Amino acid sequence: MNAVYANRGRRGSVSAESIRPTEQEYQRVIISKSDEARMRIASATSSNLLFRNLEPDQKREVVDGMFERKVTQGEVVIQQGDEGDNFYVVDQGLFDVIKNGSKVIQIGAGGSFGELALMYNTPRAASVQAVTDGTLWGVDRATFRRSITNNTFRKRKMYESFLKTVPILRTLETSEVVKIADALEPAEYEDGETIIEQGTVGNYFYIIESGEAHVTQIDDMENEHELPGLKAGNYFGELALLNDAPRAATITAKGSLKVAAMSKDGFVRLLGPIVDILKRNTAQYKTINRRLSLPSSSSI
Image (cartoon, one colour):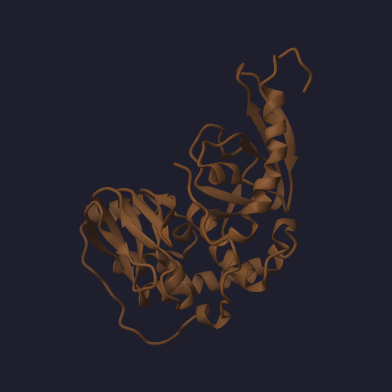
């Protein structure tokens, strides 16, 4: 089932003050865990970019404060409109994100949800309901804001000026650019390293900060074709997220490559205002795909 992109209009204004670093005194939460539990948390957060870029002491503080929550099929974990209390990472199970009665995305193991209300001191923007029985790792508001939000503020200042140079984002309001900056996570790749692989499930959207990337696609006859490359300011990975389909091409680094990545969840919730533009731009991919589907003797 394809995700339903709800509420494509402008988001409400967000105050930058709501995510400023906090140095307030607070009681650090430490919940006793077995080595097995810590290994499960490490596995659940290993591919989560929100955790990947935390300093070791920040990550340790979050993991120390995490608690396990078992859920049953049909249970509502987060209710739209409620005040935000906890942030969750999925250990096991599937969860639907539902906004105004419509499903917008499904989150599985390694995914996370609940951060926006904590970052911006706003009500929950959507509900989250368990599709299956599952297990979550939660962290309270104070711990989240002290560790992850403080890290996000530093990242925001780094990304804000860069995002203003990205053509696809120039139509967005400042408050929308701020939210996107908060949701992005840096990643670096060496020459020849694969960022996305054709046929795999898409979980992230990418914007190139610096460097170049190769784009290749294998046609129905198993022939590999080199497509136009990508450079700073270009984006990729949106097709799989827009269409809820496997990756349509393989992207590899050409030399050192630095990207800003956004999770599927953030893509759905934060890029609503430019989804129509992204969809219009996919016409060029459809033209390429039609050419690649022709007999191999045809020119492309």
